[in-house]
Length: 313
Image 1 (cartoon, rainbow, N blue to C red):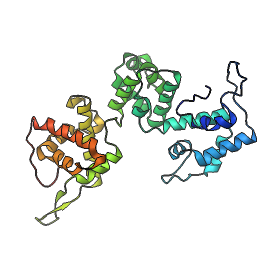
Image 2 (cartoon, one colour):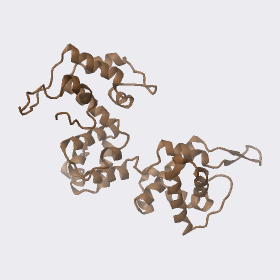
Image 3 (cartoon, rainbow, N blue to C red):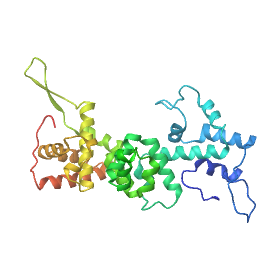
């Protein structure tokens, strides 16, 4: 492996300058490297413990250790969890950190979206680690179905002792592009879904909802509830998926709800897309969203003429 470490070998890279390659004991120059992992020394143990306690990035810490939502240790303290990890061999600790770094990647798109094929066993192994961290057996079955690959379909047929495909099977059978497409279709979040940052820009632009005051004919206005906003986000994500993949409305994955077309129709007729676009114009961080809304508005204008109205959308 030398000093050209893969992207996610964080601990191995951090230790290299002082201790050399943690996976291969210091091999004399000119010799063929073989797997002969370094053994613990007091100095190495101190350096690894220091890294795990103080230098490990927070998102990876959350993958390696049991933490609550505030980042504090659950059940047992961080130091005790680190000591348990240090019971492994040094190379095993480095490998656990690597797997934690892979699992901390937010999306499958970010992990493998740049790959046209599996260039080596490292990338495919990383994909397996990520799938194990972010999905379960039911979702692996859905990914296999969405891929429509005959080998994966045959694997699930009961007459052939059907079983749920494992991440190893998915990565072995599918190319990175095929795996990513099947993931987007079956599980998500898709690469087209609104990010939390984008949603924070959009959510305040939704109009007030009309509500009838109990035992009174009067109508009041209130902001959409959290549940209502969640449904709107789900529908918008479905609309984004449909147009990004040039899919039929019937091909939009079920995770986006049953009424994605109706939401698009209503939002187009009511002028909501225009309202959202106008609220974001001039905000530098919303430039990509404005471009997308312009495209959706243009599509809708070919079929329906929007009109503005107050009240619930």
